[in-house]
Image (tube, rainbow, N blue to C red; front, side, top):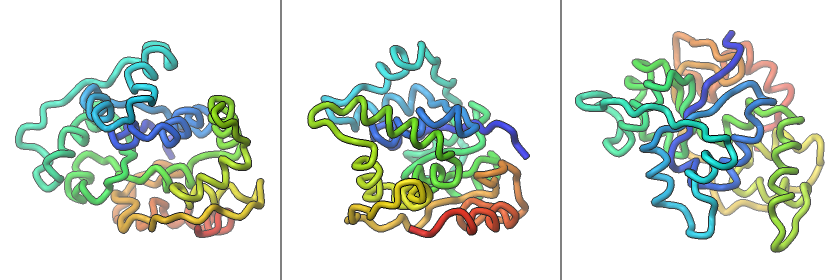
Length: 227
């Protein structure tokens, strides 16, 4: 069992303010740390809304000058992965991370992930399997306090999260027992790719369909309903 997981955040996750806040705020209480590279930060900045807090500001002001991870040489590596994502995978490997949290799991090839011993996972699935109730409540309160125009409540935020994070909503809804706000989106066709279990962090000999090895999957089935 890996006691503390290291997580690399892809640019498309960093560019989504609510998603990244959930991941960052819940990290300490959920037993993982996070990192990203300058390449990921630059890519995220190109796709963010102008009014949103930039990733660079978030990192330097709110995360106490957290350094970015080193960029890796990608030449001739990870050729089965989408060309635009090879640098991200190389940087995640260089940073010594266990998981790559991304909205584009399908862009990363099974063979390349096995080579790096990294698993790629959507933020929704990762948070639903990893985030504790205490961490979730802390993250929701942090987001609620920052939203003043208009003001919102933790309960409203929880319901809204069902639109983009249905698995996380379902995993945490035993505390709130609220109906979700209907989502116009479908779950991604591929939510996880790799052999490392999200909960215990151990490597397995075969692919894990939803990121859990058989032992952890049995416990999760008893705790978390499907969205």
